[in-house]
Image 1 (tube, rainbow, N blue to C red):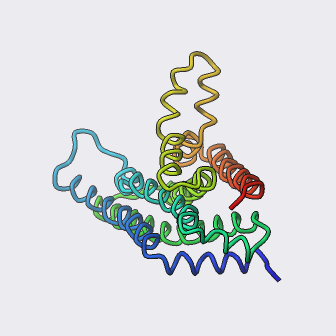
Image 2 (spheres, rainbow, N blue to C red):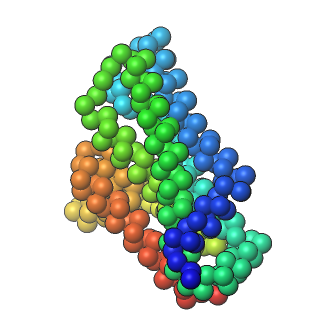
Length: 238
């Protein structure tokens, strides 16, 4: 019997056996683990004029890591379209929604594990170097890991929509990085609401100013885009 659990297992095997995906995940984790402590050392050796937030220094590598996680998400989907391997996957798992959910869960699990180790290491090392502590460290670290996971999930959604490596990456970056400044030009309350509803705004709020609302909105985006992907895939030819 084909179940989501078994399909998740097969997707995890795919992740482990594809060198490109493992390299992207490893480099994303390394960016977090290395860049934060390096920035902390630089802050100690040559202090800036204003004291910087220790957690911001510790998580200096997250921006690069999220981009890599997004690209990884795109590749986990589109990598099967180019060689037509996706047809074999859909033949073995006729319920295509199961494939979408399984890929999402497999990538989320792998990214969460790598991200948690990297974030914990970066925060611990950086705060030790800075001889500092932060009462919000655990919350911010957990939110950062979920933010990293979300970029991968959104990357997968972009891959399902475009079925193209370049197209998926372009769509992801467009929605996350180019669309918010454009919406910021919309005058009045409408512009504020549109900007606040964007995934990028939700992610920033989750880590910073409004963690509860940001978490709920960010998670809603991930669930919504995954559901949209499942709906599209079930109605398209492979």
